Image (cartoon, rainbow, N blue to C red; front, top):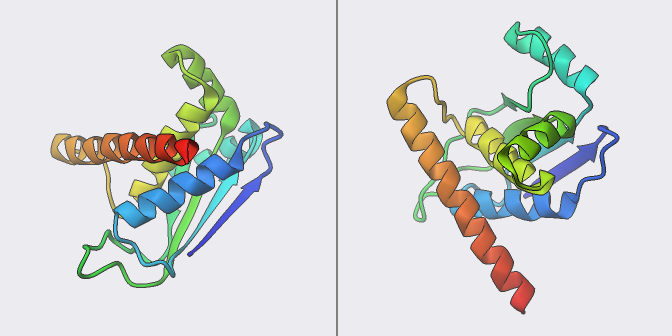
Length: 156
């Protein structure tokens, strides 16, 4: 599994947390160990350009996902085949504002946004109420499981 993280945002981010998170989430979703994903952290100007170009919406946003091979989560018996999941683009500046509003650290907001972006790469959406319940429930479960694994990792 290749997880490539590039930080062009100018904001210091603990990339190892995002790496562990993404690896954890892919394993939880039974995605092939040979699947590839890229995470790009950009500043507000770059994110605004992408947001306008791809979503036709003004201003920067927190996360955008660009799926490639249209892979879906697998099962224990049948993991997702190898392939290119796609790109997750994060904007730490927007995430920082959201984190302050939510009352938690930037890293927590980036964990949320990275998980959200990964689920979009795997075909989840939240346009309809049923889709939103499914996606946000899975998102919550993945984040909780990641935090449990992080606590275990720190104890060893």
